[in-house]
Length: 271
Image 1 (cartoon, rainbow, N blue to C red):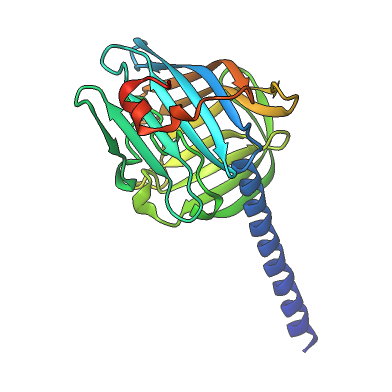
Image 2: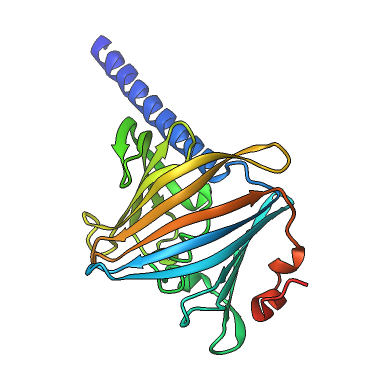
């Protein structure tokens, strides 16, 4: 009887530990996906699409952001190259339903909604997808703590101490991968690294995201924010990669509401 009691106690301790790890993983990802954001923001962005051969294509764009009742709206205005110039994307975060995403395609001169079933596709031909360009909600995945203290160094040389967390999507049809392994930086709660695993062969990594640089940025109102400045996605299947660099970010200086409309998407004019 004593042995059975001990076994029962041991099992209950294991179960409790597993539950605590699950709760901890959820709380960490929730904090990572809800970091304080400015009321308004603007920045120049440079995307570099780099082929396995080394050939490089530059894609400059402007990014505008705002918060409305705690929810985020983001606009990407692509300024080049010629084949992508004047393409514009609007993302609008929603609380009670899926987020809205719209794209203006200059070749067709029309704005259309990007349905959920297409958000796994490449963002304007780069290795980031439309899903990558937005923040995934914590409740869209099941989270499991794998390790609590992992040290990694990303391309560019920046080192991080991280939590290592497995995140499995609840609706697999909405994403291009089977699951993600996220390395969440303990200082900033930014994702230092994310490994995306293939749907067909779940033992293989299909692409890797890394945050290569970040800063603490003080806004026009004196608030301090964590800002990702350099990031990279590498396609492990093709060797192609996209490098992203943020330039001249401005926080809480005011951005016209006209940017966050379908009229701006089609006209490029916020006046």
